[in-house]
Each structure stands twice: as structure tokens, then as C-alpha cells.
Length: 264
Image (tube, rainbow, N blue to C red; front, side, top):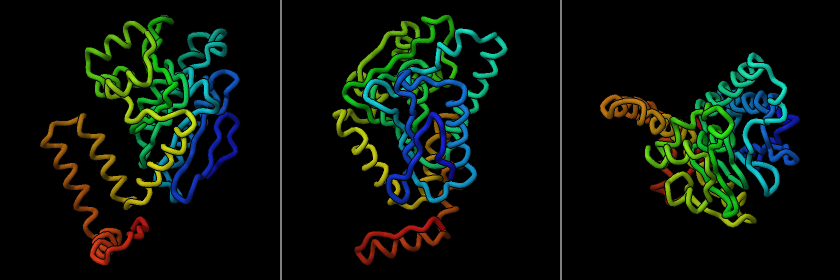
């Protein structure tokens, strides 16, 4: 797996957890075109081959910002064609995150505004620093959310709250995000990354094939009717019955020891 990115810091933290960090702290980790390409490449590489990665932690460098969204200084001189070309890259990055086979936990270390907030929403779930703030500010710039913000936010906080957040463009705190259902856990700034990695390790200790199929089944639940969703769940379930990991899991339970899963 490639790790030599210019605007992302990518490293293993343990055998099965991958830490991906936005690394432009001087501009509040705003996304320029190259960062967008790099983010897309990391997620696509996991789709092709996880290389033993069982969980991803996504965060930002520093304590000021997770990501301020699109780099508006870069966009200032863009033509309409250039803007749309860049956004097409961002769109593919969104789909690469959505299609990533392993869970992605957002560790939101600071401001997550605009596209940064949408990136957080594209994670499977979110832990946030007590000092983090969130906002979908696009309507204050003459655009609107374009990275699944209007799709993901209502599922997290409800339609009426999502309309208030998106249509006002106003910021809200980590505590509010937790109360509304957007954030799973609020952490102290100094423990955020450790807390998130600890949860990632718990996920990574479970059967990887089970995690992949359970994630897909949960994700499809809000896209189809319940009967179709259940048929998808059963198909995924039945594919696990003949695996070595299923045999190991039951054996380990009966022998009262931790299971050693191998992903087969």
C-alpha cells in the first residue's frame, strides 16, 4: 500500500488499523485538487486489496481543523470547467469512501466545515473532540452540499434538523452533534485519537469477512425496502457459514479463548 502522499499522512497503527490524516494544517486541512486525488486513491486501493487493513481512522493534522472543506483560495481563479472537473474528482472520492469495504471511523479533531463536514458524514461513524465544530456552509457561498451532505445528514439527525443546518449554514458544537445523533462519542482533545484507535482495534479483532458483510448490509438498509434488505442480509449471512473464521469463532467461544481470525 502506498504511503508517500503529499497531503495525506498514511500509516499503520497496529497490524490491522490504518490511520489516514489530512495533512495541510497551515490551511486548516482544506482540500485542494491533489488532496482530493490522494484521498480517492487511498480508498480505492482498499477496495482492490485491503492488505490486512480491517478498520480505517480518518482525522486531520493539528487541533484546529479536521478539514475546512474545499480550498477556496485554489478555487478563486478556477473557471467553471475547472471547478466542475475538480468536483468530479471529489465526487469520485465520495464514492470511494462509500464503497470502502472496511469501516471508516472519523476522528474529528477540530472544525469540520463544508466538504469537511460531508467527509465526516461519509464515515461509518464519528468520534469528535469536545472542541470540534461542524457546519455545512455551502449556501453562504452560493452553492449547496455536493458530497452527499443532503443524503447523509437527514439520516443522522432527521429531516427537519438537517434542513435547519443546511439552510442556515450555521455552525454547531460537538455536544450538539452528539445530542442530534451525528456524533457517536465526544472525547477530550488529548484522548480523541487514542479513543478512536481503541475502538478501531476492537473492530479489527472481530472476523474481517463478517465486518465487511455486516457493513454492506447495514449500508443498504436505508436504500431498499425491508424485505429486499433482509434478502441481502441473508445472502451475506449464508456466505459466512462455510468460512474458516466461523469455525474458529465457535471453537474459540467453547474453548473460552480469544478467537484468531484470518479472513478466510
